Length: 194
Image (cartoon, rainbow, N blue to C red; front, top):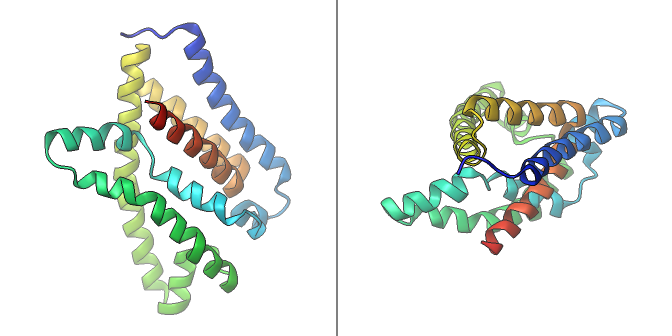
């Protein structure tokens, strides 16, 4: 199957446009750098927790984990099942900690506590890990949508990536968190319905 109905393609396009719309909405709301980078600390903990949870729901969760479970073992499933608990712990304990200390991220806390080397080391490790993770996620998305739409993987990755960059750059962290909340609800509902 390599041709979705026009309605299905329109829903995908509408979804991407809505995510960009969220970025535009929050770009008008952001009045200073603190609002852009930390939403002035006003995002509720439950939304941050759901955002963290949604960050780890990806094409890997829906394609890679079942494939690995079928081909090898169920170890990856344990990680996936533990994500809601990890998101709750982060929202319950880590978010209040960072808000109380006035830190914007774990990296600034590491720098203040242990020095610039700790921050640099943690950032480099995180970026290298995420680069590989994002690559595999985009590959999974593109592979699936290529089979459904017939579009090339390169076009799918480019359109998806540019859409994400636009709403992130325009709307800042608040746009990112609220789009992830929506995505988390949609992906969880989809998984439960399937």
